[in-house]
Amino acid sequence: MEPTSSVVAEPKPQPGTRTQQSPSPEPQSPPNGEARYRRPTAFLSSPRTKWGLILGGLVILVVGFFLWRYFASYESTDDAQIDGHVNSVSARVNGHVIELNVQDNQYVEKGTVLVEIDPADYEVAVAQARAEYADAQAQAAAAGINVPITDVSTSSQVSGARGGVSGAQAGIAAARQQYEAAKSQVAEADANNTKAQNDLLRYKQLIDKQEISQQQYDQAVDSAQAAAATLQAARANADAYAAQIKQAESKLEQANADLRTAGNAPQTMRAIRARAQSAQAVADQKKAALDQAELNLEYTKVIAPVSGAVSNRTVEVGQNVQPGQGMMVIIPLDEANIWVTANFKETQLRQMKPGQPAELKVDATGKTYKGHVDSIAGASGERFSLLPPENATGNYVKVVQRIPVKIVFDKGEIRSHELRPGMSVEPKVWIQ
Image 1 (cartoon, rainbow, N blue to C red):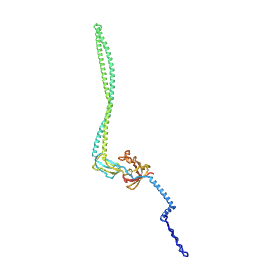
Image 2 (image 1 turned 90 degrees about the vertical axis):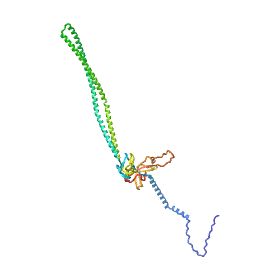
Image 3 (image 1 turned 180 degrees about the horizontal axis):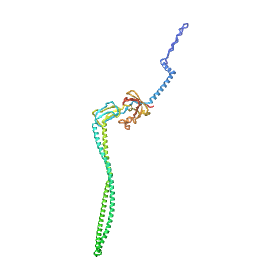
Image 4 (image 1 turned 45 degrees about the vertical axis):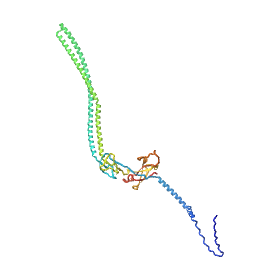
């Protein structure tokens, strides 16, 4: 059923009566819901609102674009710290520490004596090594002197032996010539003796017949005796020359033996030179031992290898130290030995390269320093860990790796001793 509405009739004015004109009724306001709807509509339909919204949108787009450009122009990380060299100081010889010249956190210059080890044993070793070296030098000098002396002596022996061989050969030749002459004389004397003996026989027959005089016979006897004596003398002379030949041949054999003995002179010289070289080698060995002893004596004073702050000191007076035992570390704090190691995610390195500028905010000082990228590590940090992961075994979970990036400070940005390795840094590298 439709609802019914009742209409109330207004009273009509009576004729002749003066009616009071009622004021015109005020327009009534619409309900609250309609009013709320009309106000935003009117606001949105206003031209000023439209232009304001358009301008506001443009401003937001421009600001968003520049913000995007700004945030895309650099890469930053909070996984970074000051890094530097840590120079270990260790003992090079064993011994008893008698003096300690530095304390923790003390700044020392390069060459400063840090620790002194008892040098008594090493001074004795130096004195002993020096004496042994002097003795070896004397023996080497004596062996060296024998070399030229033996060289001259052996050369003289060779020359004398060769001369003896030549003289013996000449003597043999002369003796043979004389022997040949003596044999000719023997033949001549033999012929004369034969004639004289034959003549004596004939004269004896004649003297028996009284056909010749006694004087002629006596002359024949004398001639026969003289011929016989001459033959005997010629034979003796030939025998003497034969003996001279044998003597000359003996001399030649002796000269050849001397020459063969002298021929061993090169081997003798090599042996003597070898002994001299051995003596010199022993002297050099003793010199090396002396140098090592002197070095060990110097090592009893442990000096600072670089300038820097002493840290992590573990040595004390009275302690016995061994070679290689660490005693302290020295950390250089100058500008050249301080840098920043920033561990960027691998996804942040797409446009990063050496030489790009960087801003380095150090938490300890609250300052921001200027620097630039020096280099990017050759592997991720986990590859240098004690137990690197083995992705080929077990279940693999991909993890974004971090790559160490070395950032150095610009020259003149930091003061010496202002920063320490290990301080936290927030670097910002401008990649565009």
